[in-house]
Length: 168
Image (cartoon, rainbow, N blue to C red; front, side, top):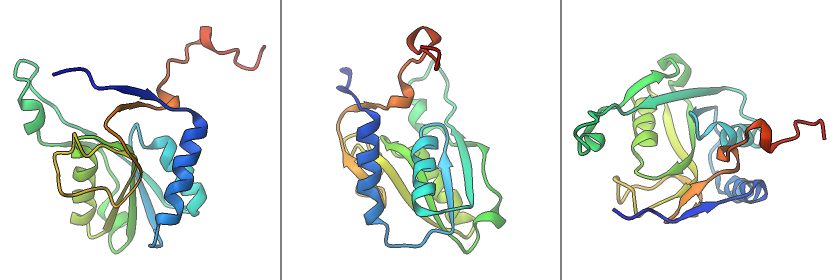
């Protein structure tokens, strides 16, 4: 498999993506579940913009056998951290991540929110329909479509040698 095209985006571009998402919301959300780690920053920005006070996190892992590469796609999700059913039941829940690549993680979270009696809505900054394993399903809300591997500004290496840390 060839390496996917990479695209680094700036904080200004993240702001534009968030601003593109906000008018799409046609539901009042009573809670937000942020998928760690990628969803933490966009989720924080959206919960402020939408005035969502009940913000929770979900951490999901897909373990696989290193010697069997194909097992990666067959792995059952392990929920390392997840809100209780009582926190989700009978509530419109916005689930936020940075990107829908294969869609496995956010789809697993959506299923668990629905299983708890919540009404899940998925939201990402970037949707990659070319990698999605859940076609024809798409995120409920997304700011951009891409075929690239997106590098967000919070993922860029920020060692102490690359920042003045306010001392400069």
